Image (cartoon, rainbow, N blue to C red; front, top):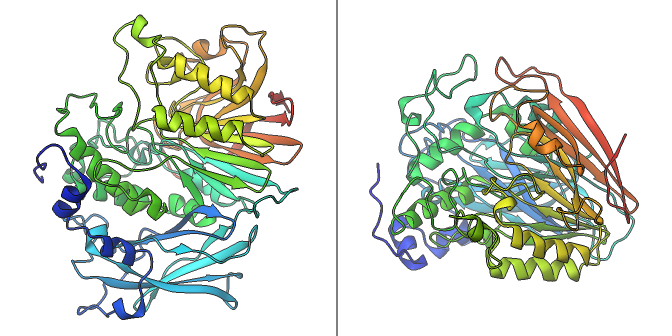
Length: 518
């Protein structure tokens, strides 16, 4: 296990410790011809074992991603690639056969970034489907599909998306992703947190997936960069997750398990001293960047990573990707503390950024992609927005000055649909939006149609649906309405062949954002 560095990390110090330089980072995005040299040793077979992905769609392009790893379980964290730089070329085409290539380039997969590359493709046409692939030596990657967003100010578009969360690979198969990947109309996938889990994986303990074993290196809680890389490699080896990444561009935020359960800001729930916890955050955030299709704007600087950001889908939707972990106040120590007007889950800067974006939004729909449940449930759920009621009240006020708010959430391993009230304490207050909470992909195993927690949720008249199976949410928005579907699978532990069905379907009219069961 790598010993943690001294406390009080700053960006320069962390980069020096990790061997990461600005040149290394920039070459992983785009490399000039002068920087491209062939590796001295043969490239191992099977380098695209972790698949391909795209993300951060814009009107003129998107981010591409792959990580060369013929042996994702290699204990040194280098995926079987050794420590040489490898040039990786990419192509973007308007057809799956690549007869019309419109963009091409090269990036350098370096050991310092786990042999990942993040090409940022620009100059494409808005609102158009594209296909992409990579090449390393003679090896060609699987083909991925991406789509650009509509042009700024464009009206009359539609936007179809899915949401997913909480994919404990060791709790079950990702059969929900198999169904999601088969959809042909997705413009984007929102991932809402807990892409990996940091816990040790132990057979007979928390390894519920039938017919699967893992090595002893996964039996301990992960703490180092090498361990985080191993855990991403384990999860990303799943073929259905790879297919879901290849089906559409992803927009990702995190919750807690990308670092450690229930952490907030610089506070470890399990007592890692505050002078050492920045190192845990730094290596976890580094692995997050290395393994996901996020842009250079979200490159971590030591223990900090700029994750909240905004994207517009023409005039149809404004997307606000939120970070509810990095800036939050600690868990309250008393009821008076919980009710304090100064408490924040977003931090002052992100709060103001969000309120400005809502109040000034020209969009028909305003989407907030968020890690934990926003709707009021019970006062003791302090990890959710229930632990930050003053911050929620401020955000509700900003929503009231906007239009058609849709909050997208994961975290609780349940599929839940809720209407957002201007004042949750007054059921007769105005409905100003809806919250669509997706269940887990696999976390907590098979689940059930209902469970003992249902009474806490469904006691409120603004709650419209509750189901405890695994699955995802699909939605399609137009200028006049949003149709949302809660998709479930009956099991995930036995095998990967479960058939998905729609558990509930709702219509949300524009101008009157409520949940009408269909």
